[in-house]
Length: 352
Image (cartoon, rainbow, N blue to C red):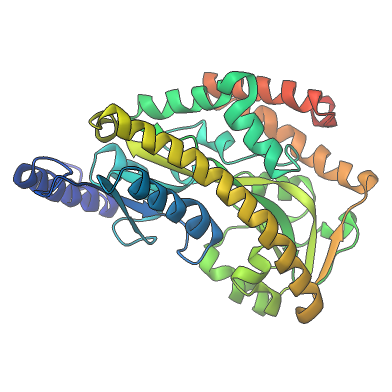
């Protein structure tokens, strides 16, 4: 018999524990009648995604349910590795997962698109409009169907963050990117390669030291991380406008969700959507503040490429749309809708 991997063993023992607790307490509720869900975040508890989307969601649920449903959020790695979160939720070892679509790619190929693609949405509002509301929520419904097929429910709460190139030295022209060693994840390595740079794979926790030592020349990450993880100590350039967006997501075990009374299902769904809007409003305000601080007190140079230069980003990103579409029939549906939406918005990426 083939031995279990470490991640599978972890989930196995968590599942046994969950079943034991369920047998003693009658499910995810305790003797006091309160339903309690365990949710692990794959994103740091100091991040804005955690504080202004995930924690806000838990706060809203507790308040609007009158305390009947409580969601306890655990920091990354507390229960399982971030890349094992989806399996843990699928097996109901924990009730909820919080992170980004990239963690869920093994089970949900459409999550590659869910987390955002480069050269597509220049504003947070357009990202939310497309993924949640466009054509009466067509894209969200496709994504949720993919999650439901795997025993989970994707909440209507895709909170985007703008991605920029944070570099050790300031960059003022796109051609200066050629030959640089740049860390990226998700679709970023393909974009980096198409820009003539060298993609490097590193865990987020290693980025600071890698920039400090010159192991990498830059990183594609949310622009606000220049301050939230103190990259401004070792990186003095931010290149925009946003190359794309990366979105935080929240999903729940489908059986746990379906076991809720109808009024609590409504509380969960509405709280998730409101938390998304709260997050977008919060980071829009905070990004302006942190960008100003980066330039004024930390010597960071912020450059926004003119249209004639930014078109180079679009050309490098265009092939990623077809690659994303090829992942599954649902992915092809989403990319077709995306091309339609971007054409309506005057984004030329579909013509390259």
